[in-house]
Length: 549
Image (cartoon, rainbow, N blue to C red; front, side, top):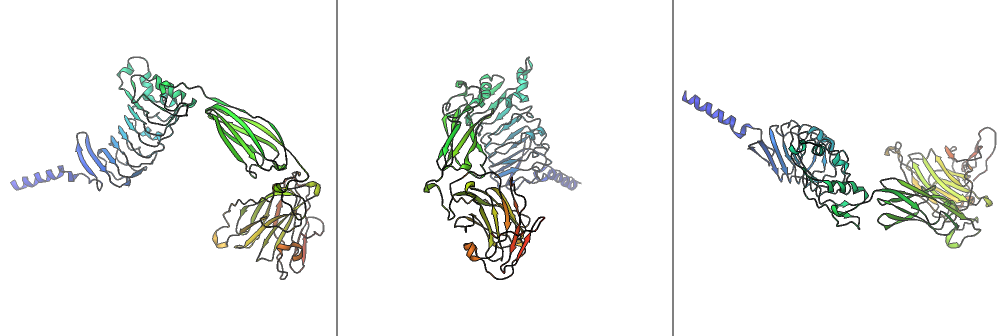
């Protein structure tokens, strides 16, 4: 009988021993404290919590453990957890659902991590939270409703972060603060509310005016850990304490220009200027019709802390650059605009340094680029300009060194797009623009290679942005463009640089679709001719014969 009693006592001791509890995480220690069971992991490389922590823990302390994120399943079945310390763990992301199981959580410490933002809505699941320590992170934004679910919080530490501008509404919307501002004896019975905001790079301009006023008005039962908050900028306010600073109200930018009508000659350089003043200091941008094609340098400088001067520099202006240029100044309060009209006068001949002569005589300006390409297709876009008085026109060549096919499209000036289908896959092509009927020169062509069938490019468009600028002279033309397609005869003496083998039967007429803007001409004839001289003509309604390129 004594032997049975002995074994029964041993069994009870075994049940009461720590071995009866689930084992700790590898490298961690578990202990029994007065408030409950505790898990401590110090300098253990965890990566992220696996979600299999025992559920009976009251306190979890994981520090210096390279815990990079808190996913949704981090604290599953840990509904009894009250104290969670995750200091110096390099945490960068907290999933909005990570705190959902922690309905009993009273203290959350996340000091010394790398948080740029906090999922403030996640605190809806922790109504009992009293301590939130977020110091020494990288938080740079505090939304106006960030603290709305921290009803019972008594300690909030946001010191040593990257906050520059915070609205006082953040704290006025805080239920814990509101309870302590109510009249009557109730607030006196509440514990003090401790707030820490120091050691942030505060930008003391008009946007911080409300927070500065809030800090100046703080009194018991609200306690500011360090009431001497310091301005980091702007330069005139750097080093000043909040209680020494007087900030003005924010105002929308006021914008002006020294000259709203500018007139120059073709080829001259011109600088358009606008000055904007506002609080906070405005940012300035420029908009104009051909911004997609013509990019100019913009120089912006601060004349004062609340004023900025912006200069749009146009070198060797073309006639196509004339028009309205809009200067836009904006800040957090609003925006203002001013329009500068640029007038450009044409001249018969420009200096050699500002123009490029063609063998055909006259001057021209055009940009050519490949907008889209697939395995068997290409979309070209160009902007071309010539002198209407000379009745100039451009020629677009699309040719291949290996295919018995050459495509020549005669186009008028303007902005145009041109689609070519049925190209050979995996083939190198060249697209060129030239003035009149002259062969293209070096630098006037764009080279592209179609994809291969097995490369999977049929479903994907490759965006290219290749711009060829031939000269800096622009002569006025109407917006309309005249486009007609022709398959050029393969005669080397006529096309010079684009000659091809004069043998073999050429392919059928290519599926090319020129597209025009405001084109008054609607009847186009496409003529195809192979290398043996066989010619095919396609007409919309009546018979006709187109000329060769």
